[in-house]
Every structure is written in structure tokens, then in C-alpha cells.
Image (tube, rainbow, N blue to C red; front, side):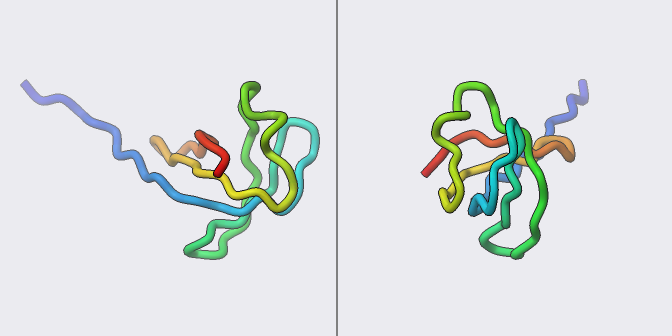
Length: 67
């Protein structure tokens, strides 16, 4: 039996700005900037200038942790 396994990339980024439930972040390795949705449980922790760890799963970026 063949089973497909999603590839999960774990990366870090710096939060540039926060607008309601979306954060504009910059990847610390590639310096790419993009918008990412902030999960409900991390809304109080994600602030301008903070460092976050995000995962890329099947092309979707998800914030998992605040450093």
C-alpha cells in the first residue's frame, strides 16, 4: 500500500505588523514578506517585532509558536 505523507517545513519569521487577525511577517532566512492568519490562541502573543515559528503544510502557512 502506498500512502502520501505531507512535507512539513518549519521556519521562523519576524512580525512586521499586525492588522486584526492577520500578521505581515518576514522570513528570517529568505527575507520574503507575506501575510499570515493569526490563530485564536496566539492573538495576544503576536505583536510587532516578535519572532514566530510557522509551518508550511501543503502550501498553507500556519503560525505555531511565538518565540
